[in-house]
Amino acid sequence: MRRYETIVIVDPDVPEDERNSLCDKIKDVILQKNGSLIELEEWGVKRLAYEIRKKIRGYYFRLDYCGTGVLVDELERSFRINDRFLKFMTIMLAENADVEKIREEIAAAKSSPVKSIVDDISGESESPFDESVDSSFDINEEEEEE
Figure 1 (cartoon, one colour):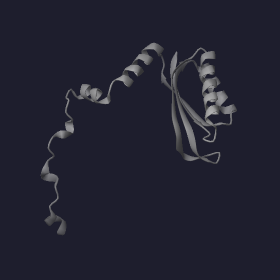
Figure 2: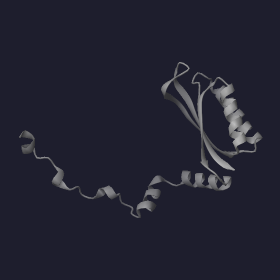
Figure 3: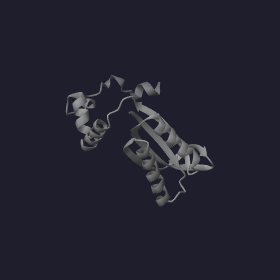
Figure 4: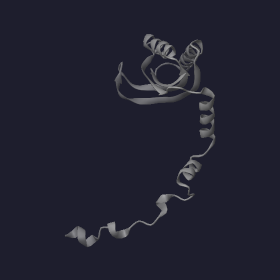
């Protein structure tokens, strides 16, 4: 199975119950095509970079899932048919993906704080920016007047 990520922009005027039904339809398509939904994130209403169908805002979703090309084709076909979807974009994240391993990694990343990750990378508990700054770069007031 391949791992995909799809960003979907929905019309912001769509009521919340309809958005929920759209999410349910997406989940159903993924299950029907023998895919596996890893994560569905709702990013909420955001300003668009440019107008789409006379809308300046859109409701964003991020789908992280595993499946085949047939699944991606069917999802994108349903996005094109339904006018409530303003835009979508799908990218392949990995050629061969293990769903259980990905879910474990996501759960581990959500449970551990960011500070411990930085500590692991640097090998120090203190910030590398705590060192004193070289004062040779300071501008003297006398130099500014000249």
